[in-house]
Every structure is written in structure tokens, then in C-alpha cells.
Image 1: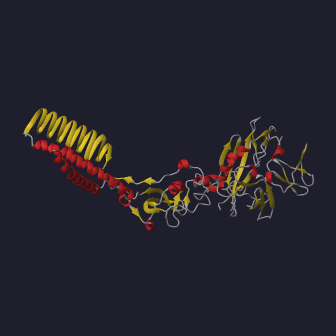
Image 2 (image 1 turned 135 degrees about the vertical axis):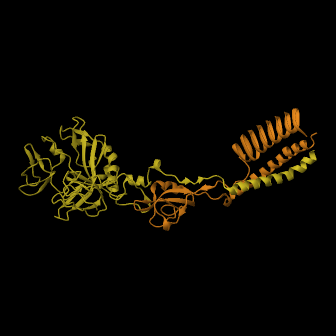
Image 3 (image 1 turned 120 degrees about the vertical axis):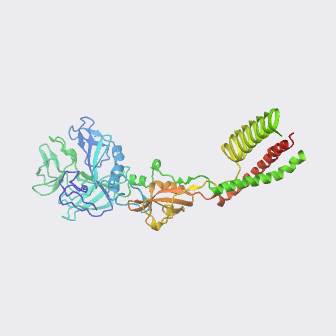
Length: 318
Length: 207
């Protein structure tokens, strides 16, 4: 596995700091081998009313979203996600440093994929569809407590469990992959975390979801530890409306399994007919000397035989 | 036989006339070793209608060769039905090597088998560009040349050139050749008996 940023978990290019969070290159983590394809995303959608690019910190197929600036609940069609999820799947599947991604086919070559420079000279890809804009990059999620790469266990689609090998912190995340056409297996991020109580929101601030003590919330983190009972409460992005400065989008992770649509296109398992290469015919040269000899001989034989057949008739006629 | 004859019906070594018969004949109906006319018959003939061993015309019959808009003959140029059997064009093939010495930018002989993961008989570890996948699947078994390059993870096949089977090994071509030969013999006999014999007779009996 290639190194990831010690602060956010996004893959690091071969030189320089983290493109995703801007952290300087410290001591990068080497994440564990995993069968899952992981892509870190920061998403925004453009509000229909005020035009503000509001954070979208979860994979939500409900068809609505809330602008953190003007507070408008608005329609946000799931087709936006369906259009971009195949591209997001392709990022961890085809990203370098190997020319064909981490899982090349033993019989068919698909290079160049257009993704080989990911993890080499760049780590983040910008995608957009309609009102949805995403910055995405390969990597591996880190423990929210100690920033170690976590182990990922998925028993069934939509239910993701992580375990930190460093501090032992376990987390559970839930999502509804069935809402989407692309085979996304799950999502990892504070909005999807279901094993922590949600902070209560009162007119004068946030209260601990466990003991009700006041919480210090600045909008930068979605998980806040209570200073009184030490329980961690979850703050949903919708609860952050009305802050003087709307918070930036959080980094969260999408989990995919198996070859991406792009890989299957490159492998010609689906689509891609326009770039198919045909089998060529051998080039023709001038006729061979043997062909000339055969032709002269055949002409001679034809004349001789033909004359032998026809000339007696001619003499009869004349 | 006159050296030069010019007239309505001219017969001579050089004949020019409406009906010209000679070694060199020029006329509306010219018959000669070299004949030029509206209707030219003989050996080397040029005319609107030309019948000869070699002929050039709008309509042409050329036993060895004809160039015509519409014609029939041994071979030819234009809309000509070729009757002389042909072994087929010679192929311009690159020089090949074997798999043990295959390296970047080399050609190797291979075979489309139609089975296996790629449909080609390749040594272990040699991969094929996926853009060829559907073409290989549709290709009938046969001999091919494959172009090998040093790819992302070892040798890769990036081009496949089909080598057509030699005509002599195909029963279909033997059938075509039999028909061609029969028609060719009839045409050659008709030319010898209908063009050359009367022309020689006329010259021989000319005063």
C-alpha cells in the first residue's frame, strides 16, 4: 500500500505534502491491505436560493439537502450521485502507482487508464455534476481518536464497522447503498456514524447527547467530546445552520467493492466499442514472379487447348 | 502483299481503310498484329471495341491482359472479369522472431485458437491489449502475426495481423480455378479461331 497523510488519510503524492488537507509531509501512515476500494471525498452542493456552496457530508439518497447558509431545505436529486459514483469508484480502483491500479488483469492490458498519475504526481480529482461538486482522492480512513489507519469490516452492504489497531476505538457507520445504482458498499464519516448519540441543539448552543452538559462546538469537527462525561456526541451537518461562518465540507469516505465500471469498460466487458481495435489484414505486395510464370503458362495452355478445339471447326467452315 | 494499302478495303503490311487488314492496321474495322480502330482485332489492339492478346478499349477482350471499362480476359484493369487463375497477392510481412527472443517492438507468429482467456495461443505472462478483445473473440481460428511491446507488466500484444490461408490450400479456390480455366480456354479458342486464323488467312491470300 502507498503512504497516506497522517492527518486526513488521503494518499500522498510521491513528493510534497497532502493535497487534500494541506498538511506538511510528516511521517505518513501505511494503511493495511484491504479488499475494499476506498475514496475520500469532500462534497458541496450549490444552493438553489442563495447560490452558496454548502457542505454535503453524507451519501444521502433521500432526495433533499439543507443549505447551511440560508437554511433552505431543497430538492437534491439522487441522479447527481448516480452520475458521479462511477467516477468515484474508478479513483481507488485505477489509481497508481501501478499503471493499471492495484488489481491488474492477468490476461488483458488496459493501460493507459488515465488514472496512473494518481498517488504519483497528484492525489485529488475534482468532479462535478449539476449542482454537486466533489474533491476526491484515494486513501484510507483514519481513527477519529488517534489518527491511525483503521481496519474495516463489512458484514452486509450499508453497515460498516471499523476498529483502530492503535487505540482499539470501534465505530459503526450506516448508509443506504440500495438507493444508488452504483454498487457502493458503504460510507464512513461522522454523518453516517450510528454508535454515538447525537448532540442536542438548544437555542443557546449544543448539549451532550449523553449527559446534557454544554458542548463547545466550532463547526470544524463533527464529533465533540463532552468535557464533563467524556462521551463523544455526533453533530449532524444540518445542526450547524446559523453559524457566523458556515463550516467547510468534512472529509468522509465511500467504500466500493470489485472492479469499477471504468475498469470494465477498459477491459471491454461493457461498452467502449468506439475504441475497439480491429485485427489487421496483412499488406499486399506486388504479384510474385511465380504468379507471372503461372499466368503466362496458363495463358499458353488456354490458347493451345482452345485453338486445338476451335481450329478444326474453322477449317470446316472455310 | 502490298507494303502500304489505303482504301475502302485495304490489305497490306500497313493497311489504312474502312476495313483494314495488315500487320499494322488502322481503320473503322482494323485487324492486325497491331490494330487501331473503332473495332480492332488482332494481337495488340486499341479501339472502342478491342479484341486481342493485349487490348485496350472501352469494351475489351484481352487474352493476356485488357484495359477496359467493361471487359473480360486473363487479367486487366478496369471493369474486367479475370479468367487466368491467380495464386493471390504476395504478402508484405514483417520479419518475425520466436517467443524466447521476443522483446519490445518485435513480431511473433501466433495462432488464433478461439479458446483460452484471450483466444490466442500465447506463453504464460504475455498479455493482450483489451482493445483487441472483441475482435479476437470474433476472429475465426487461423495464423496471425502479433506485435509485441514491453508493456506495463511484461510483454503485451498490441497489434494482430491476420495471415490469409494460401489459396492453393483452399478447396473453394480450386473450384473457382476450374471454372476460370474452362472459360479461359473457350475464350482463347474463340480468339484463335475467330480472330487470328481469319486474319492470317486474309494476309496469306492477299494479292
